Image 1: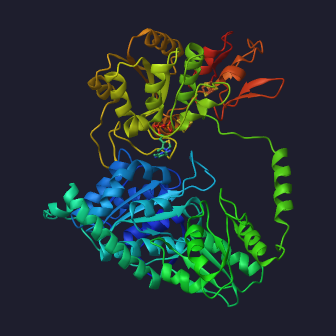
Image 2 (image 1 turned 135 degrees about the vertical axis):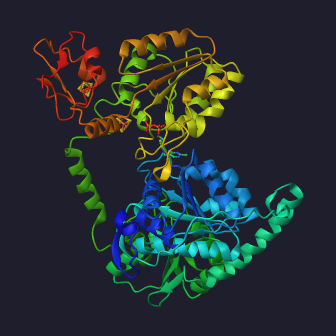
Length: 623
Ligand SMILES: Cc1ncc(C[n+]2csc(CCOP(=O)(O)OP(=O)(O)O)c2C)c(N)n1
Ligand code: SF4
Ligand code: SF4
């Protein structure tokens, strides 16, 4: 909990979420600057440091910001590091794709103040569009990767990562996975340093900081030399260790895989030597060699790609050691691991049976889950995106409907079916640029306000410049709803409870040169549909800003102001045509096969269903 994250009582043991432990680590490390763009599973690191920033004023001060996207977040922290301050940024795994340009080059320049970038990977894709394994980024960008294996380590290793970054003057990727970010555990608190936020004088170092080719060529050699020293350091460092018994079989594990492997060995009553690796780049090659050279068979337990496995296999050839991993089918290459996965793989190597029949347990569990009614995610009652998608479907259902990532991706579902493409943030309008040139249909793209600022603006400029014919509906609910209602540049507040300078979407769009710009409240269905029709007639790019506050925030605002929500009800004029159920499907409208009614406790009182009902049978309920 937040109160524990800011608690100044060294030695006390508190119960923290993995992401809170990372935030606490940042506080104990005395960070100077923290910047982030939200993304599950990393968001609570950011939201915790946002709140802690206010509470720690006058005690442990740092600058906090929600940045417009991950590339900027990375660069904000890098700027701080270049000035000798401790800079930290956090993002979900795909955020590193956005920040990658800066990441690769910053490795050459190197850190001055400690620099730590959290990459929160998402095995099983609980809330992501892909399952990329960001350990490869460390190897590709030549940036050290440190991976904690428990909630306590999450806190400790952030502090150590800063010390390490400063020792070797190198940025660090702090890689976590959902199961660690969202797990809770006991954490022993350390000291919170006393620190005021103070600016420093800038020291020029253009031979290092300006990556013209002549400098970059020199810096590459410096980086390679650092990595050699780091590998040596990791061979002996406290991040990695060997535990367990002896014998000719062993296990190598990294990240949370280490915890699963430990538990699996306990269950199997197999006292094998276990090598835990928390520095996945550069790998502690000597330590691995020393470990495997004593063994005949080694199982490698790691989630996602056979990253460790490929490296270990290359070394194992010299020692005639047999490797049991993903490539020979002992472990899966996708989705999250658990103790059962680790046990099955290790038992397979040992030629033993598992302690439980995991396959039949999983089969039974899936039989039970088949009985439960399916509960796909739905728009909240009163969600303005639902109203927008209803209008888009009515007016442009047969056209090409690229979209983006946010709550509005739910527009893919019945009855809207108004999302044809979703790749990654910003790609909705990007792909629309290409589609507009090759398909006969009209292109009607949707993207949220946060997504607009994050990565849609260059594609909009591209469309105006290249004279594409596209309708762009910006679903402006005045928040980044999907990741927990964080702010973005379209709002007048920012991180750490401070006011912001509001960047208006309409000003940006008009400034780019779009001459069809309309702002409409999507709750007004007929107006929204008429504007859509006009936009589709327009030659060139047209932008509709569908502006209505996210209902969760609208409900909170009304509650705060003491405004009673007036729910709607279905009256006796209902002829049971079921249009409100089959064409609109607000989740407050109930249908049990016989009766249709509105659940007053869920209804947000938006009145959109009134406009959907052809009989005008839906009316506000009397208080
Ligand atoms: C590169 C990247 N960063 C972060 C995310 C996590 N994420 C998914 S959607 C989204 C933004 C949603 O906000 P908005 O576009 O305003 O739509 P809303 O959810 O409010 O409807 C974020 C931050 C992501 N998928 N990809
Ligand atoms: S959180 Fe807000 S934007 Fe997301 S579905 Fe609910 S009402 Fe819509
Ligand atoms: S007024 Fe109608 S559409 Fe709006 S939340 Fe209530 S039931 Fe749903």
